[in-house]
Figure (cartoon, rainbow, N blue to C red):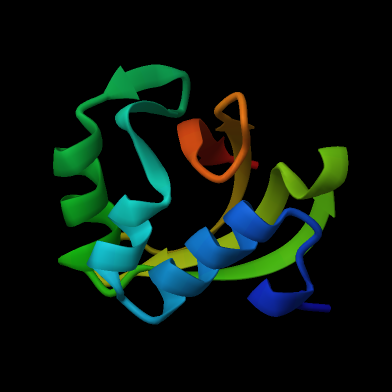
Length: 109
C-alpha cells in the first residue's frame, strides 16, 4: 500500500517527496542545505547532476511503500524514463535545527 507524501512522518521528507512527484525542482532544491550531499548505491555522486538525470530530466516519481526512523528512512517504488521502475531505499539526514536535508542516500532495496 502506497503512503501519500502528505502522510509521511517527517515534514521535510514529506515535502521533498511531494516536490519530486510534482516535478518541482525549485521546491526540491529549497529543501536542501547549500552544501547537501548524496550517494547512490553506496557511491557519492554530484548532487545537481544526479537529480537532473535521475529525477527532473527523466520524470522521476516515488511511490512510498514504508517508512521508518521517524520518516527519515523510506522504501519506495521509484520510476523514471531512463530505468523504468525499481524498489529503492532512501535515508535522509536533517541538518541541525531541522528544516533542511543535508544528505540523502538512495539505492536499490
